[in-house]
Image 1 (cartoon, helix red, strand yellow):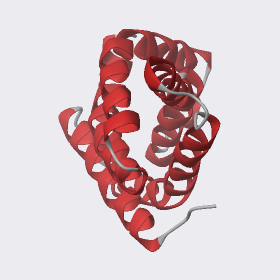
Image 2 (tube, rainbow, N blue to C red):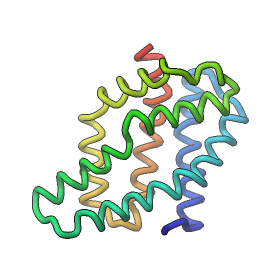
Image 3 (cartoon, one colour):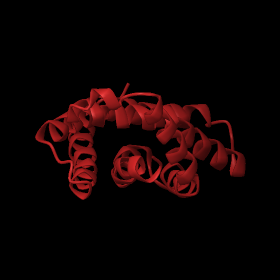
Length: 160
């Protein structure tokens, strides 16, 4: 199991920056939201994501060529699925004090957001899983996810 100080710091900083940019764009900035995203980035995301990426490497070790490339990419996309997006949006609602907006509509927004970003997500996850060394994947993914956090936050406006 990987849970390193370096990933904790990276998760706290990168995820909170991405979400803060989104919050500022939507004029929804809240210190509680910022602190909540620092907490989630430093705990849940910095633990789950590096361990999942390590599992992907173990799961695909016997594959080669295009099969390995597609398997690694597909497994990464499968992780960042509509339920992951819903959970991320639910964290935002929770830390913003908007508990009443954690509902099935938020799940529908997550679903449409996921479908709309598959082409971008495929390219990014292909690069992260197949071109970036395992030790740097969490940071690369966190940076991409910070950019996607902006998109996910805006997706509520886009897909509502």
